[in-house]
Image (cartoon, rainbow, N blue to C red; front, side, top):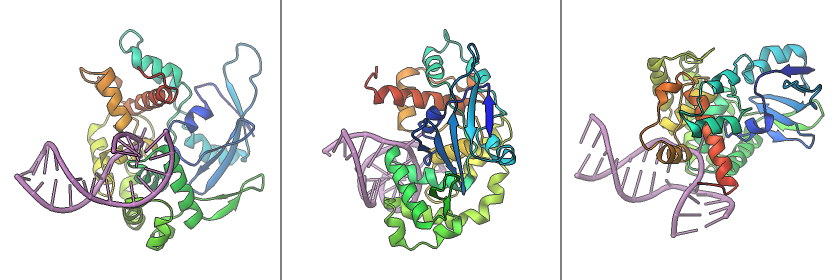
Length: 291
DNA sequence: AGGCAGGCTTTTA
DNA sequence: TAAAAGCCTGCC
């Protein structure tokens, strides 16, 4: 099917934003998007008439699956253009530029268990290493399926599948010391899932008490600290005010906001702006144009 | 009590 | 050798 999106939507920017680790770039400019046990092939179609900024994409799923799942996954009911417009160039030139340059990013509504395990695995490592470990874990415990082109992929393993893996197999996924955390989360997740899902958000709202309660719930998992908990809040529970502070964001805050970051100005979308900043700063440092 | 140093796996530069 | 989307434990 073909869909048209008038709001910000850039597959490449989303794929490289560091919120998802299992997307695969295709040779036609599209992506194979893996989430939980699903797979979607999506590719942007060439722009039509002049002056039309809307983006059309071809998807390999039936219409009902788009409406029941992928529409929500890509967060298509949110208006990211409007979120970007809240940042004034004269008040916050750094964030303004980050939003302009990383326009197209959206905050995906990702699978809860996959996101929890993925960000446990992410701690203290680079993105390629994270992707490799997750790929190995899916091969070790996921289910092999075929996509619409007949090419196989592995689902993200169920909690039970990970919980039953021997230590040696987990270690072979290059998890390092994190293997214990990965196993513990798999064992504990089923009993905690319902409590956790109560913190899942339909739309952005300022609710500091609920944000804190969600963090507390998440940090109850062995191996989950404040940073990983914020990532899960943002990328799976869709709590858009969650603000993960990692080594990169720490550098940004120290370098660009020596007098403190005005997070109250950006509520309830702090997490969205964090993502623009994070992507922009990484982009700059990757291309050696830092400072 | 709450803050801090040190340790932890593995890979890459 | 240091750093990489950190966290746990033990010490003070």
